[in-house]
Amino acid sequence: MREGVDREGRHLYPVFPYEHFTKITDEDLRALYAFVMTRDSVRAETPPNELVFPFNVRSLIGAWKVLYFEPGVFRPDPAQSAQWNRGAYLVDGVGHCGACHTPRNRLGAEKKREYLAGGEAENWHAPALNAASPAPVPWTSAQLYQYLRTRLDDLHAIAAGPMEPVVLNLRTVSEEDVKAIAAYVAATMGTPGPDRRKKTDDALMHARRDEAVGVRADRIDRDPARAGDRAFQNGAAIYAGAWAVCHDIGRNASIGSGLHLALGSAMTIPTSSNLIHIILEGIAPPDGEPGRWMPGYAEALSDEQVKELVTYIRAYFGRSPPWPDVDEEIKKFRQVNAKLRAR
Amino acid sequence: MITLNVNGVSHQVDADPVTPLLYVLRDHLQLNGAKFGCGLGQCGSCTVMADGQAILSCVVPISVMQGRRIKTLEGLGTIDNPGPMQRAFIEEQAAQCGFCIPGMMMRAQALLERNRSPSNEEILSHMSNNLCHCGTHMRIVRAVKRAAELMKTGNPASGPGRGTR
Image 1 (cartoon, rainbow over the protein chains, first blue to last red):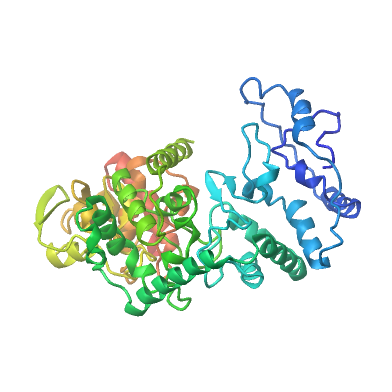
Image 2: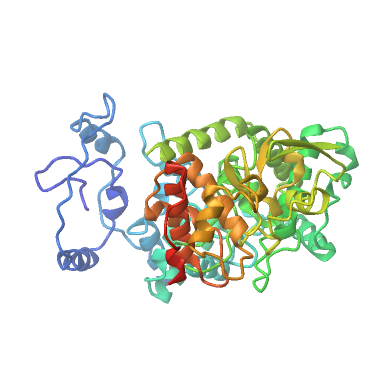
């Protein structure tokens, strides 16, 4: 946990996030050890190392650690509040939020200068948690707390993809600690400037205007400037026939309708990967739990149709320039899915 | 005009491209097997097949269904000559009110067309999108297994359905 070496003294691959766990205090490490040692032992063979050369040479990790690994327990910042420091300790240490939310360099090390600036997890984009946060409505500490506790805050999208199990795990964490995480992340995001606030007002106005009208199937006529844009029109038709019934009226717990898309960060992040994941595989409640689900469209839509839908949603709801990576991300998703199915 | 291929027959449909497939099946083509349950893609009673895959016809517009091979309950057999999936559901007496059953059969059909011998676990996970308000899920699972047998042997299994217990 502290140094990234196993019992035999061999270097561990940083896929085990000791870069973060090194920050855990002695007291917490002892508690973790005590808990783990009360578990029943099971026999589990370590899968063989299938990495390609030179990554399969374990001793090279030593060099990697010299370059990128900074061992050492978390040191509180006396200039900050106790809650901020508790949050920083949990986020950077045992929570290892940066493992997904901080971008990595070509050797897989977190870029320290781009702390929590948006990274990747399991082919999903993990949005920025710093000032570059793509959330159409800037997060407050209270909203982050609500989200981390329940998967759902009124003005933000549901926790999906690799974030879903994180939120489920946070149920076991004390209220105070989750509040500390929320407060620290909100502080890292900072106060939004006038540009950001203008965008927020636009997104909220867009959502409220649509919600007031209710479900409409005539979106295609709404934007005369795009009358000749066939892909956009086709995308609008798919949205109107498939998604509008649930998303046009905004989120309503009693009928289970979903967030208005102008408020979701999948539309505003730098990559189309999350929106494509959500379109193709949908969003289901966690195993064994009740709740509404969004059906996936992997079977219903062709790649071309997915692209049209993505293009429309990005432009109309995300109010952002087209993503350059749509074809690539759709292909990636289909390949990964085909592999999973073949298993 | 949009051309839809349903159960091997081409239909010219005069409807807004945004119209959900379910409405066109029922209102234009009088194929009333697929049911309107929730209209939100939550219950599965509108399930039909497109190119062998189960889809929710209430939240799929016809604009995306051109050139796809659509199959509905009516494509599985007739009252006089029910197909193996339908026979299995009858033999297991898997329906109570029956509203969800067309969707159940279509989703199960999609599974069996790509996996002739699904495990219990595979059946449960594949069918989990479709809800039955009456609670006949266990009979439905038995019917899917029986359908798998019928499709393999091509013969109706003998004896009364176990669902009569």
